[in-house]
Image (cartoon, rainbow, N blue to C red; front, side, top):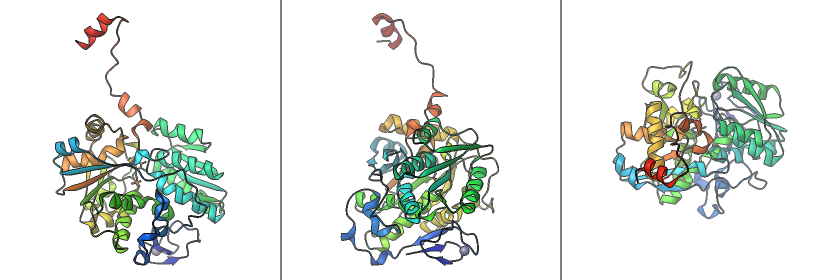
Length: 392
Ligand SMILES: *Cc1c(COP(=O)(O)O)cnc(C)c1O
Ligand SMILES: [Zn+2]
């Protein structure tokens, strides 16, 4: 295995620390020769079950038992949306409550193997929550740069309790991202764990493997929210590698949902945003409030090559989808995670088996629910007044 530039195909050894290509500044990926892998070598559970596909030595893995999240059939919601077989891959079941843990177990293990003394990230919340937990487990210094305001409370609490050093800067995520990248390049001891890190994305691709193993085949379509778009890129890579290895027979179409006012990738695919940038991204789905997605070239390739599509959903549509999932299926996900359901209601997909990747747990962002919820009903402490209120 080797690091390869996604844009110009330049190659770098696995232990060279560079987050983008030295010659063209393109994003990097790990080249895996999946054809040589043997199914008998997939053993154990969770992300590290797929160690033969990962470019990081599993021997001293920093793990909190991530992966192996449920793939839940959603009959009622599926019927409502006109989809024969709808599944939710519920990434909120990971140790820190989001899919970021799949990447972080691999990324932090890599940091240890490289001899880094600190890990760092810019974050809309979940990356920092996850990095803080894995960094703590590994005994590393963890440095988090947060954009001013607009980070869900539960996620900040996680970073705090795990002992991260948290710096908040004026400006949005994209500003924070640029600064932390400079900080990492400037200091050899700080290892950057944003999704520009190709080793982190290797961990995230295991979601595709789990879906194939759970269903016994690849689904027809996979729908995801897109922020920095590392996840859609990683999962598409996973489906391709599983097929190359001969472990699955087909590939799904990949569908990406973005929020209306944070949709550079959708605009780019539609031909209206060449540079793939939005200046002031806004959405209630703070996890995808990203204006300059670092993995946009990979995401565009995933959508195009798979024959998928991308579309925008409004905040209102996202919040409705969040309620639908909670009320019809009993699953509480954060707003960004409901964007795929909103996408299905708005655009539909002609496919029988559809997997929505629900990226993070709803409890991370209770304000998104409570700020628009009706007031609680106040009652005298008597049976009569409770019955009156309930009309029972
Ligand atoms: C990070 C995150 C996303 C966005 O993932 P990208 O890889 O940046 O596209 C979506 N939802 C949740 C809950 C996240 O934490
Ligand atoms: Zn290059």
